[in-house]
Length: 393
Image (cartoon, rainbow, N blue to C red):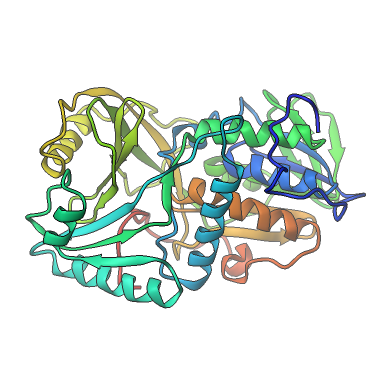
């Protein structure tokens, strides 16, 4: 490692030579791409990380930084737990912050469908070994006095949770990747060709690789389409804000009202603002809608009635990616070509674990069968569904 690289390997990741002799390109230096590049490089692969802009320039830089392990499905619970543990292991004063903070999700009285869904989720989480507890409104109020709970029918609380700065995490992992031997090429738009697998720069020069991993978020669909490959993916727009105020804990998702919030150095961060239709990743509006902040802050003030003055500091929009079954596309598309996208708004929080798994698969390890990107033909018709919702599935 170089002298300036973060000391991520100490007590967290060992350096091995499993990838020696493998030349791998990673396209997209968001949280997932930076993590995968680091994991490939620390296993001895010859890695080049391409980014058409700057590190964390797109969705990762606009993410909320909410991280939790409260997933009911077996593979989701396993990945989320591994991600939280890795956030903890890699964070530190010289790397990036990770603040432990309970995560609460709730349904209001009268919202029987979501209340039943939360109860069902909690049963399945507990069966997977996830530390998650059911609470009544009174119990929630006693545990977290700052949260209004007199209208709450049921709440879940997960202790394996926290928050971080997504931009800092991504920059740290990109720096760690270069410290482990990877080459970072920012401000470098590329396209790709297959058979053989090659990266094509804007100036027409090409570079052949043993494998190419595309982690370009909302741009992944278009990048692959230009190479003649279709995937079942739709980018969609979400919105968030930072407001002044005083909210130390918990992180909270009000399923009935449809928003989340977490502590933030400037007060609190809140969001959702999901638009359930496909967005153009090159042309979407990066500013929040005119009525987004006022509407959301009204809901936040209802849930945090005793918080200090809550006033808007800034608001913005970013992109998430949807798939037909709401599970991501992670794995091999064809010989030498891999992809990781389609996380329904949960990509950043799972990046430490997914990045490690896809790096292992690129170097000959097993993939995640449930997330196999070839389970779809790529021409499926489907609706964009908000990723934070609770369901009985």
